Length: 347
Image (cartoon, rainbow, N blue to C red; front, side, top):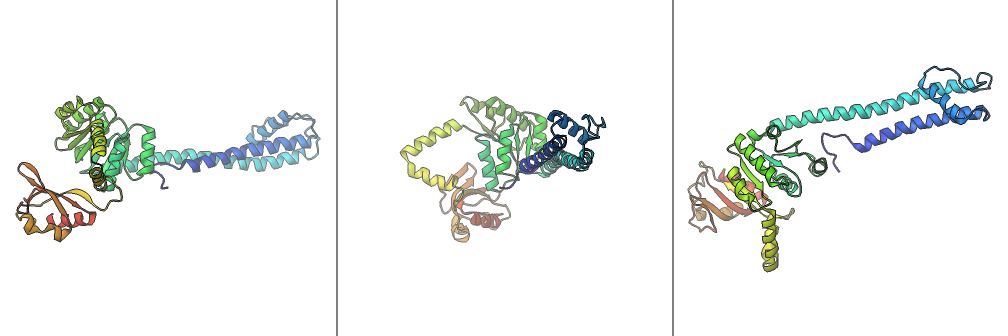
């Protein structure tokens, strides 16, 4: 699995710390056991351990074991312990320092890369909260290759986001804070999703976002039905109630399961062949002003037109004489290749 960006590998850091600990403990036990054996057991093991630690740390207290100078091979062993022990201690210290330094360096560089990525974003979407709803918003935006940024303050949710979508830029912070929204590029954003867990927080986000960016499209999550009108009054273009939609979905699963299955193929299946997409018609497009019969989009781009933009909103199931208005939009059912081709034709 691809590692999350802007973070060091915890497995690598852990293995380095284990190596450092094993090295220090190992050389200490070897030194203490060596002194104990050389002394023939006349020195308590605790004193041998104390002598070893003094030798490795080079504190210079001298030979604290009685009769040390007269004991054969004691000083020779001590000399070897100094040479090897200092090397092991230095190596262990370097491992610990590397973990600390690399972790801090990774954090600093990661923050800089993240800020650069966020500063480059424009006409993007901001997802506030990646809980049970927000993570699926991110999934759909990534699938459709939309530029986005995430705001979340929960560490566990951010870890899940990084593991699943390692290339999605994020800000660890409170989405209800104006400075956090500005760091996410709210002034340049195309839209914002207020998907926090509480209606009052989403209401605050909507108010702040609308004051900063009057043109952004804002879609807000509404837990309670009474919050829908408040969110719309505050500036949300649309609201989504999970409880309402869930209830409608359960009823549909019971009375019209085949219709639901078809809609799932169109709107939920990750490996689906077809999708419902909105395509804009440029005023300069050669298709502007033509009827559906004249445009022959089904034959040209293998796209089924479901609705045509009109003065009164979308006209669904449009007849053959429906006109493609320059500056308007159409809604089509087609695969990704057909949608891309259609956008070139009408753009």
